[in-house]
Image (cartoon, rainbow, N blue to C red; front, top):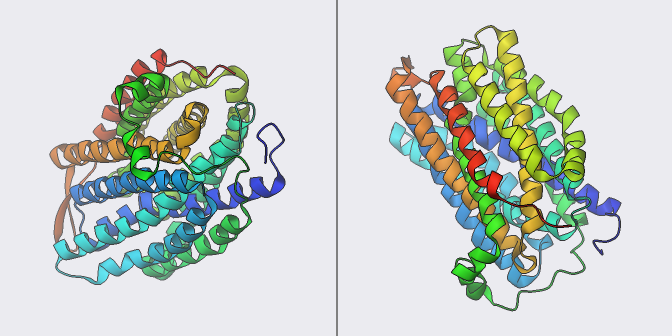
Length: 419
């Protein structure tokens, strides 16, 4: 398909199905893997931080090297097909870690299983699908397509937060993960099967290691200066965001004493509002530019997180949560569209991996460790089934709010792609 033409219905549906299936799996991994580890194995925030940080490394390394492989081969579809198939299987495997004892062995197995799941997810989604979307879009329609992917992320997350609590209470964590794995397979595999390869995608002439080594030299960095500035901004956003995000449901359940199904509904409402707003945001990004919208999102996120930290009544918790979720969505649409505009044509898969390096590896290692340290230093002691731990305090949201403002430093300096 030529990128000057309107995007075909088949490509749109493949992006919708693949985005939805992938985000369904990531939503479970990002919150309910953490919650399972905390509630079923040990209520130790630092274990959650280690799970998030180690799998972030796995995700980054996978996305870079498998993304480069997809560039060298000039293929996206096969990586998505195999990746989504095994991603579904390994999502269902995760709760088996709960059968192991002692606790340290159970934590180790949980991290190992999460890393295996992450390898297939990062291959299919972070590397292949993200590069594929750039392959089949242009600067006139990229914001709208990115917002469409963001809507799939929100719907998937909405479903997980809206129904996961009820399912877990009804059948337990183990059956819940089996159900999610099955749904990912039923939706993701057909999405990969109908996705046509981009017409202008060709194998890289540099070879595999040549492609990897040619990225981080002075000439490449100078040539892609604006791209790297946005990537640095994404890293700072990821760090600030992950100071609090891995602990949101734990905080709602154990600090504010909101029952898990009601806590899930709070996030459900916030996501529902953002779904309604996401596509208009994508149109605004295409119309007014990536930079203005991104800067506005940073300010809104910082203010809403600060207010969330001081919210105790559930109505104020829901309102402030809705605002920071909306700001997150707005940032995602603007920054991801901006990054896609600037990706080098011959290295889209690999550079999709570098986006994960900055946004996920740095964000999901440094951020959760800061949050875990704050929780274990200033949190309230708790004992669950005889195991001592700590409850994350409101301070994690306050620190995140101030760290969020650092994002402005690189993105103010970055320039947009000239259409």
